Length: 385
Image (cartoon, rainbow, N blue to C red):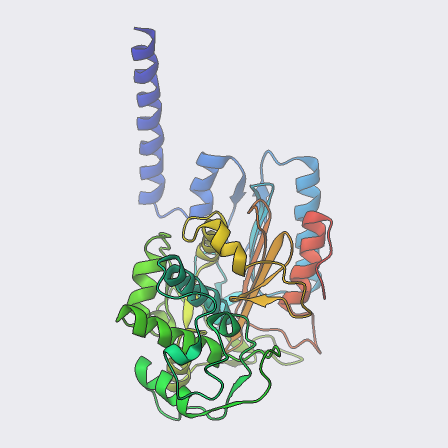
């Protein structure tokens, strides 16, 4: 009898909470507001205003204040999301998503993530490894025997950008996915195998391998195997959302004006980024993406960390991220959008930043330098420069 009464009380509480959430959502209240009902962590007054933190410890308040001061001093423009010991301690935005209309930046708006997409492509490859269709040691010649050095180059070499392959020419017109891969195969050279060079064509070739293995388009595969399983509600290909009012605009800054010139990316450039940099996300999705992946929700942790591991090399690039012993770093910049991430592998601590004005570092600090300072405030540890 006691259990039945307890269950009824719990049911009534859940009904009341759902009713409150429904009212709030019906009024169009932002995510940060109804997060308060669930976690009692943070309560922004408005996206462009400082967050009014509630029930934070003294150390959390100190860290959040110090971070906010650093971002203001650095004249940062964009979004910031910070999590410390699994508690959100700072959510805030700075500057404008659209200067012409004075629309402020928002954690709910979409921003291009650039090369962070390479981590997604790497995860799709890990899915194929998990299914035993390929392995890290599978030679590139299995798929593209016409490429010089393909008998020596492995899947792992492509994932760590140590293939020695370099692209020699860019397409001048928009191409289909298969044609982009074919163009890449026909316009490359092989020079310094096993030497690290940041070269996007490695991931274009990985995208081509995925297309061959699954007989799906890259867009279909990413949607079915990553976006939907991880329940990313605000993640899409840039081409599909670039004209949406939910997408921030990007700007070229000058010494006198952060919003000196509004930018646009042509169709050819967008298509050329197959598997390497044509995705947009909002800040919440970007944080959720890495949190869920590091938690093993997409790839078993043993397999994931066999790639995202501290490889003790001067350039610890592995599968779209820079991996340390207990953290991963990611960054992507394209068309002056700049997204950067630092997250501990246990997901307890996280910094996610998205800017629509990539800083000219001769004028003010860049997002990577700011992130590294924020990480030291957050964890007390320095990141490698």
